Length: 103
Image (tube, rainbow, N blue to C red):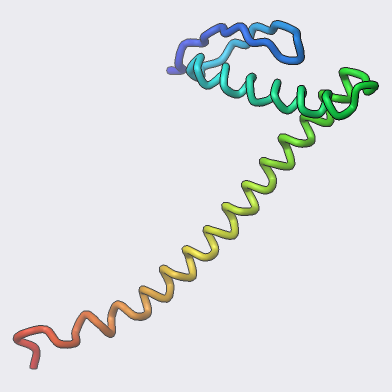
């Protein structure tokens, strides 16, 4: 069973949109505000660019952030895997050493 869809009014680029989502309204508002901020930032540096081009540039900026975050996650996952493997190699050597009652 899916969660009920909620309609949320957001303003992006000076236009109001109704977004229907199963996500919490607060989250939808936060995402829209974030994207709107990127739009405003790009628009302020490029006064003569068409609105649709600004939207495309904002989409590219957000996509770049996503790719950078994914790359960071992949690198972190690799580091954690290496640490786990190293700890696994070291753990058996420490388990049997120095326990009372060992012969």
